[in-house]
Image (cartoon, rainbow, N blue to C red; front, side, top):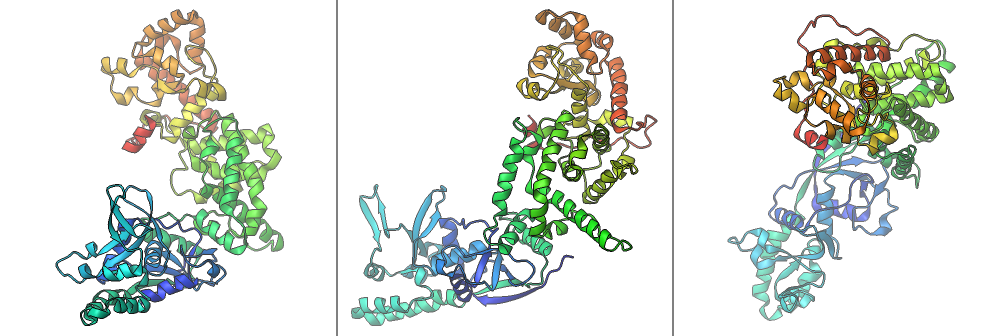
Length: 618
């Protein structure tokens, strides 16, 4: 259950920075590194010097169920690594680290400039400018190179030299890293100006009261999450408040939690090794497993973990209602390290089998996967089935379940509940139980073919794969579309009646641009087709390749195309015949009848492709 315990208060800035130095305030290990640039640092110092608000920070009290591996704020003394922190910074890391680096540490600050080049800087406050109301305070904050010398003319001319404390005193340039420890610098300043002590003492105390006091009295708003806050709540809160930083997903959170539970356990590295093995499990580039996300792996892991828990509960207490199988984010975040160790290896094998299953359905490319989400329950099912999946009857049921999900278009929304039912139902069905809910729920209406125009549609991708699975051969070469030819020949789905011919013939796009008028073809064949009428390009293919019409007709039939209608440039007859042939194919793989009656509602339009997606597809 999502729980948030929090309090809001204000804390002195110097107290927060000292705790960061001493290791009492640290970062969870999932936080990204410190990245503020030179201008950002000067802007932050300017705002604090004028007592402007710079935003709140959010911390999580340690000692609760969320045990992250902590790490020190960047630049804090290494000897404090073993200190047990009181709290961890969830939001505000960049501000706290920036202020710690510029006001507490005596070492040079490593940052970047506006050109994204790495630079090293010490920061100073020009005391005179800071006290001049006519000068913008931002002009009083300056950064100088590591040698504390500003030069021009390629280093030949020194503009400012602050390489000794005496030169700092002489130019009234106060180092920001002495803001919270200024006594020794003040004594040196007075000693340097002993001959003009009265005037310089007044100058110093005015600077101290108007500028340094702003830092020393600054109160930083702090939202403190209690240690009773749940894992899911931490994840949700972090996402809401940290919109400009690193997105915290379940995997990142588990990475930090596991590292906190077992010293040296590096989940991110283990996932990288697993992902590499999955990518290499099929000797083909860009296959479906190459885009598997760690969150998807852990969703499947949650299914196996909760199924295991359900079996154990049923065995120990047969009469009681067993706990559910689930893979919600809260469940994923609750996966114990022991469960990961128990199930991860066989789940990896489940994903490898899922990749082989997709290949058996002629889905070779990650962009051709109808639903990436459906791979999650598929892998969990295959992990549980083990060697049983090799039996023909089991494979047939897997294929029917898969295509019912695709053409029923059942995996496009909130589908965690369906994942859980898929796992339970499919294990039962392959052992002689009833049909799964996904198979029962799936329905396909004939008019849906008339709206399938975008390759982002799951059902559109499904027809593309099914035609290749049914043995479609290239019009020109007669070559079947297997995993080798698919990439070597740059196979994609193209118009049968070319777009240019259709537009010239005044056929509306809503008729010629659907999946019914498209089929998988090689790049070279599509170029050869061009914009000609079918009768013309078919004659050209026959002449160019020295292939008789009978052979080309056989190639056309392998695409469920009537050769006579195509050679006669009979667009309407072609659409009607092929539409029915595709519906029959869909019926066969779903194992159920397609509804061919009159539409009861206006057919839904195809999904909208935004500009970024259109560019990617192009």
